Image 1 (cartoon, rainbow, N blue to C red):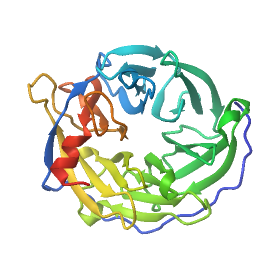
Image 2 (cartoon, rainbow, N blue to C red; image 1 turned 180 degrees about the vertical axis):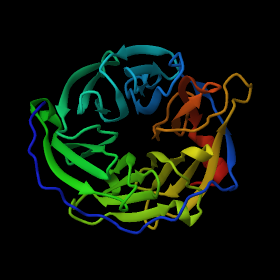
Image 3 (cartoon, rainbow, N blue to C red; image 1 turned 90 degrees about the horizontal axis):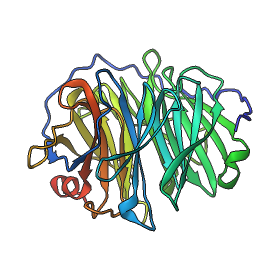
Image 4 (cartoon, one colour; image 1 turned 90 degrees about the vertical axis):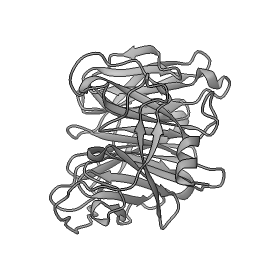
Length: 343
């Protein structure tokens, strides 16, 4: 999986400069955490980004993959117990489609690939694709017309698009596009998510807001979805992005507004109207602490045990103190839906 075709960058930049940012108060709905994963014991910024793998044959056997940006990839069950650890280096973000997962590996400057065996619900590292660029930061995966896409994002505002037929990924993936996203100056990107049903990809620019790319035309200029300055709840840093999807392409985009310890929800379909803001508080019985300073997150709309309408998984900066024993919290989507009056 080391083949690549270097292409000329598609230099498509949106140039509006952002005024100075500040955190501001906004009405939020408190949503209690339901489950937490085992901690990444110790101090420092370790946990970053989760991804949920659904075991369709046995939903109770579904998995949560979580990156440890000091060490590798952890694997948990829905009760939060750690099942595996893969020592693959400093992986920052992770995403998956089907039984394939990808992670941005800034130790090897590569996209790391993982296979999930549906028969045994185990994860294995199957190889790395060098990106030819330093420090891949965020990453998201997509699957459209049997083509698997991996999109690493970078601190200079670049996104790369790597692709191969889903059944031929092991033979190598090709670099099919490089796209410049975001404003001039500060344009650090991280979170991103494919919305295949609506032919769009959302990308977060940490100091500015959220952009949208056209999945059917990589040469199209990025389109602004929301900005910090608009006052809908985003603040710097704009971090994790993911979507709750319905049966016919409807759904919601969720974004982490890291510095304000909150999450902003938008309609998935244009014009992407803001639908509300929530925080993740301590569990009802007080056994799980509240979530602060979330980096990565993942949303899954599949019905799972204890989560009949899907779940949200978020990184927690402190467990309970900032930078201590970081982990991931699981939240019942039903509570978010009801609190914000979502369909």
